[in-house]
Amino acid sequence: MKQLSILILLFLLVAIASASDDTIVTGQQRVDESIAPVPHKAADRSIDDFGPLHDPEMILQFNEGPQNHTMGIAWDGTYYWTINGGNSTGLLNYYDENGVYVGTTNVTLSGRGIVYNPVDGLLYISALNGDIFRVDDPFTDYATTVVATGLMQNGQASLGMSWDGNLLYDYSEGVLEVHDFWTYDLLDVMTGISSGTGNYGGGCAIIVDTDYFYTIDTSSNTLFVYTLAGTFVTEYSLPSGDNGMSLSMANYMVWYAADSNYDIGTWYGYSLRDWTEGPVQFDLIPQITVVPEGGGDVYYDASLVSELPGTYNNLFYRSYITLPNGQVVGPQANIPFVHTPFMNVLIQGLTQYVPPLAPGGQYNFEGRIYYMGSVRLVDDFYFTKEGAGSDDFVFNPDDWTSSGFSVAGNTEAIPSEYALSEAYPNPFNPATQLNVTLPQAAELTVQVYNLAGQRLATLAHGQMAAGEHSLTFDGANLSSGLYFVHANVPGQLNQIRKVTLLK
Image 1 (cartoon, rainbow, N blue to C red):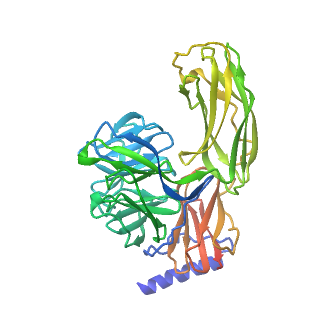
Image 2: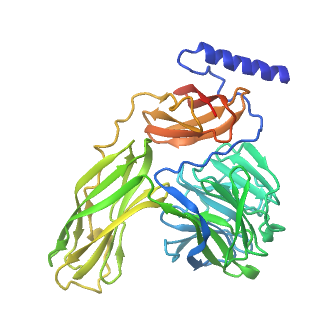
């Protein structure tokens, strides 16, 4: 076996040295599947950044229903989704952004953990038998597919996911396992992680954000904070909650539930880290803000100015109108667009139509930028509708129309070929960036190997849209040396770039 590994490694190095275009020969997509400790980079912070840790601040609470026993909660940018387990019949309940119950889907799973993956836009559930299920349609009964069998160490375990959706975290009784979210390969094992005693004490609950993972001790409601490399940072006491399996991460918040004796429980959402606008500025600029009694258009412009060098796909602009009586209409616009490097655009002549029956008075218009399923940037302004109108009329969103939002002029042309760019900077310390161009949507995998042929990190894995994708390789926890970044699109792209880490 040792001789075979040496031959494989020599073959890879010879192929690299002899290929003028840095292309790996067919069959070398995976050099070595051996399990080794993996330094986990923080997920891509995209168009925002986290602030520092602070004491828990409760942002939202609401009661679970209609079935009993709170287990896990996830946020997809529109709804909070909860999975019922224990004595329930396997239901997904969904709630609006204020925690108001909307509906239920029967998935017939005794679920434990649930996450929303921003890569494919789907929900995933861990079940009591240790399997992982994908929810193919959260609004259709029974629409689930098993994607991993018996993966969880403990059938009661919650499901943890990295912020970028590429790593799966499974925790039980002090042992944390890290898996590739898409292949479910075991990448790393950490031991000695604090938590409560037993399942109901929080002994199998794990959540993750861009820089830290968290465990819980329900006997004292103590939340333990660790770096992604497993170094203890601090601990906090959460004011409310008692269900050791309910610890979840959703909509930038730590969620924890009180659910005694399998009764319908209460979810508590705590902020531990504030989000900031970071290097992207979004502004709405009102132009015409008085609407006549017979109805008409509000006119405004929108500005997006970014200091980010990368390309980010699948952003959405959505708008909402709050009437004088408090009724909210929206989203009026739901427009996808692409963030391009150092974008600086002024979008002029946007309109919002206000119907004749709209009541007179002051309105609030709010524009939101969504990325990875959540609101990242917000701005608003006020406008006035003249006349009396009807204060009691419940409007259909189709009575209002919004138009004009487009950043097509700023969007780069779709590339003509599949390619992995050179890294910049190179040599680097501690991080470097590479771009992958795709002329059409494709299954893209980008992984990092060391000289021994061990896979150290997965920078991308899954279906990606056409265009240019910016990827960051963070070597903060690695030693100086030569590394290989390998990009693969089946039948289209099989390319590597050599990068040098100098500390």
